[in-house]
Image 1 (cartoon, rainbow, N blue to C red):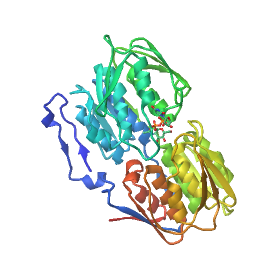
Image 2 (image 1 turned 90 degrees about the horizontal axis):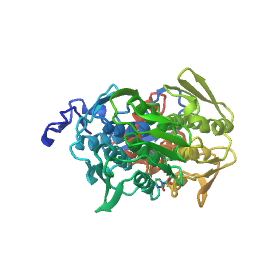
Image 3 (image 1 turned 30 degrees about the vertical axis):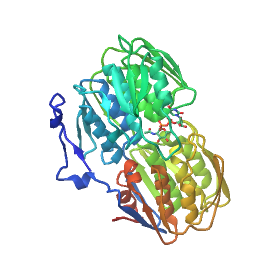
Image 4 (image 1 turned 90 degrees about the vertical axis):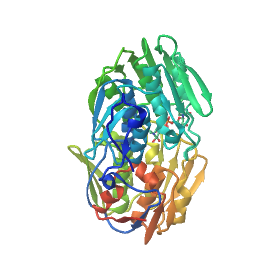
Length: 453
Ligand code: UD1
């Protein structure tokens, strides 16, 4: 894995040094061939420090393209593969950047060499499309490869593009690349109404609108905490954004954005994953540097199932009582509803609850890829359309499993924590995209878990 070192953004391309440092191991989580082996049955007790939010950090990094001054970030989850992939995309664009092991990063887009994001890096991560709005706003022109296919449904980017067209951009698709050109005089503020709530389209257009002429209103905007975090950082850079956290976001365009220092919010999906782990495996977990506000929609269903949850300062304490877990229903929705990124993990918990629970997925089609794998471990799940009925079984049995996306992989690790015998999770590069030090964090709490070659 690579560590990206600061370089002079005005220097020749050949000076864009990407070097592998002597301490590469510390930064590295895995090669794609590794597996995780979990032996079930251990209760888990202890403290886990929650990392910075991946889905916030990625967008904050893209936002640094909007200014020619340096942006400093703290609580950046630098060990994640996705962060390093995006660092590569930014560096190709000419951003001087440093990611440090103390979870800080510096990003300096003094000059953008060429507003072109190549297929070779973009294909590795869909979120790379989020460089489009900032590049278009700053350079008046951008070419970004369309992200490749994704395991979770079709995931189009039409709404990202629709918003930019409303701001006056001309957009064409040529040879797999989105080519966007701002009108003479730059992007113009506009009213943009999204027919469905999209996190990415809200973010891309919010970033583009910061440097547009006049006022932009994003109507039916996403309200996720990551959107608020991005808006807060943009405001610290000199943007004029109001309505963050509501479904109408208003952006008054400004001439220029400047540098700032920003602390990335805690990862609510990691927080929720470990809360579910406590419910499943029993014991008490203290999750530090996070907040119940970030996981409100998860708290009620977990309490209903039988988890005790409290807050002490910036820590959440999640504790399983002796009583059996009870089945309960959930439905994924845009924030503040139940997060689709916690659906798979919650379903794993339901497989061992007394009674049944229904899981309805309304955000993505085809987000039940974990079901056949859980069934191989003995789960009783029936899928009908976008709903799954999970009937509790007495126990799960360890098996060799594999998942095709990040959160589904997490759900299989959770299943392994409670399954009888040993579970081997293949393709763990998915986990390394989104969970920092997963094995270390769980084993420090008593889980029998290790990486194997
Ligand atoms: C982000 C998160 C992802 C999370 C998802 C929903 C990141 C990097 N990823 O993804 O983990 O699961 O929010 O909370 O932050 N859609 C369109 N056209 C578009 C864009 C989206 O039809 O142009 C549809 C999608 O297919 C999906 C729905 O809108 O059905 C929501 O997707 P969206 O909120 O955009 O998800 P992402 O931003 O891709």
